[in-house]
Each structure stands twice: as C-alpha cells, then as structure tokens.
Image (tube, rainbow over all chains, first blue to last red; front, side, top):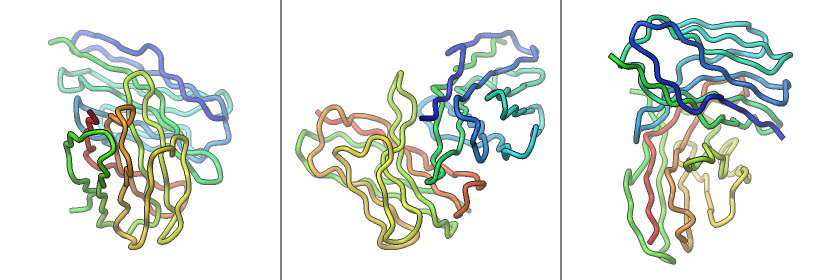
Length: 112
Length: 113
C-alpha cells in the first residue's frame, strides 16, 4: 500500500528565505507526482506535476524534483513571500486505478 | 472557464437525513473521483469513476454511494449520514490516462449533527 509522508507538519520562515519542502513515498512504481497548494478553507491548486520519467519541473519561483528510485521529492521555493503561506500537499499517482495518494501536508508560514 | 463545481459549498444536516452533493466538470474529463479531508488523516479517496456507468470503491467508501449517468456529473450520495461523515469533501476530474493532472473542485464542508 502506497504511503506518502511529509515532514515537518509545519514550518515558519522569515520572508525572503529560500526553502525546501520534502515528500517521501514508499512504492516507487508511480505514474507521476503532483504538488498542490491549499489555502485555509479552500480547494486544492495544482502547482507542479512531474511525470515518472522526469527529474524536475519549474514554474516561476517553484522547482520540484523527483527521485523515483529513492522515493523522494522536494519542492523548492525561492525568495519566499508572505503570500506563499499555505499548506503544501504532495500526492503520487499509482495503481491500476491510477489513484492519487496524498501526504498530510506541510503548513508553511512566511513571516513579513 | 475550465472548472470543477460542487454544490452545496456548506451544509449542516442531521443524522439520517439523506443528502446529495453534486459535482460537475466542463472539461469533458473521463475520470472523476471524490475525496474527503480530515484533520490528521489527510485526503482519502471515497469513490472514483473511469467513465460513464463505471464506478468503483476507493479507500473509504462505507456510507457513501455514487452514480455516473452523464460524463460531466458525479454526485456523492449519503443515504443515512452520521456524525463521523462530518468532513471537507472534494470532487476531482482528469482526462483518462494516469499521466494527466487532476483538477479539484472548491470543496463542500459538511457538518452532520
């Protein structure tokens, strides 16, 4: 059974800092890995999708990497801003029904 | 605008009173699914549908029903809601193929008294 872990559960950093959010998964037979952002009480916004054959994806100040063999992904946020404060969820697609399995998320707070 | 919509967004009900949460997508996606999100447990899949008239159980299907009579709609039915079904519910859709991005609705917050 696929399990996705995100540690720590919460993170607080000063504005301007570069930071890395980690995600690990137990079954390396994934189709892809997706990073989502969730604002309090809101839905999920897809940030980056990395296919299993890819090593990384970039969008603006965000860069996500994937090491499928070791079961790890990182989300790098450059020059963090208070508007980046949110919960970041990692999810992998696996299995015959191509189901998304989510981590519990990292709640990020960027202090002005 | 491409989107997944859910209704209602907020709902307070009582134990045993049947309810339906609607989900609709305008992207002609084949695959649709329902998730619930609970503190400390994260998001878990309830049911999914690969296409019209094709549905299957996810990880936590007990107490829920779904139907997929049309491609764009995937309602979630709680025949006899109980307090342990108080949760935040998300509908999602994507094109067929495991490599595709999933798009999520805005969520429905349900409170069962």
